[in-house]
Image 1 (cartoon, rainbow, N blue to C red):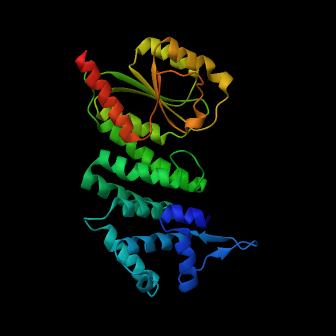
Image 2 (cartoon, helix red, strand yellow; image 1 turned 90 degrees about the vertical axis):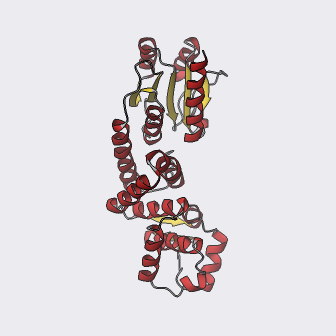
Image 3 (cartoon, helix red, strand yellow; image 1 turned 120 degrees about the horizontal axis):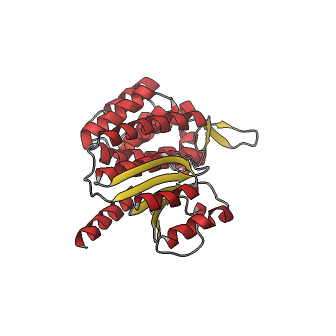
Length: 297
């Protein structure tokens, strides 16, 4: 896998201009070049840059880092990442490195340390969600190798499912939320996160998973009478195929929460029934507001 200077900037937080200056001044950073003289970085180079960015964040001077060998850099970074005051940004970078190496043990160690330190919900909100956004796994933007994406997604998927199952059952009169992905939508991580959050807040969650035919949603709405629906739209969808789905939601006065790529949202009609969810905190606020509104009625 190779990375452009723009991708290296996004994954390390080091500005492209700074990378070019370092390349001129220090010999630890020598990117390769294409036939047309465009810089690119290998996996090993990117991992080293991530380590360097962590050291820079912790007040190490670049002139000092440039004189360190790889073992010194790795040991120093390891000490930083296992300390009690490691920043979220540093932890996310460590997860990126474990993903690049396909290192399951390291990924699990980082994840589990954070759960012990700040609990699962905060770990998901402040570490895992930003990590997935950064590497493009969350919205399917193909910024990593398919193998790396599957590796990361499956590890997180396993943890979310396990965490979901460990939560207590909601009250018998708890409000219902149905979470699903329509046909051809396969990026499930954000939806699983939504299911966990909803159940943790006391909602009765019906999780349908991937590739649910839109006509089945209408049947389920009649059967369950849920308060909310939740889905994600990543891929562009043919409008004609989803017109009936959108009309059904309005006809049944059903509120649909949706995330992902706003340009992929298939409903062209304006309606208060459709609510774009920007991030997990927005989702939490919406669910809590809905619960508070129900208690006032």
